[in-house]
Length: 125
Image (cartoon, rainbow, N blue to C red):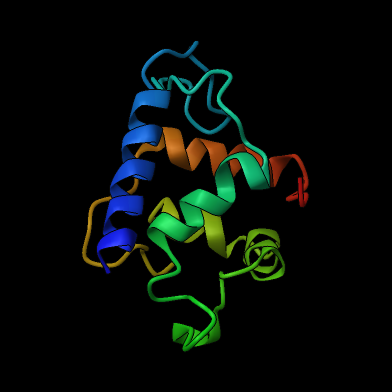
């Protein structure tokens, strides 16, 4: 339990530090977006898998995935990425069940990493 908590804290701190020194990006849906994620990694192994573990697998893990959604492996993440549910839920868009539930939206920089990965084809890279 302590190791899991320490791992989560370290990963969260890493993502917060990573998002502070980037070049602004334009968002295709909002010309007034001030997202500044720049050149941070957006590969599955370099960013997405860790973000999914941090924010999603507590409820959507292999043992008893809520809603039948198992995000503990690449194939499960790819499936919800390709059907649009991954971005819709983490962006808390209308028509999607907001995730993670009962919390504020995950940081825009981290959403942008996942979004860039999806736009690049949701590869297992």
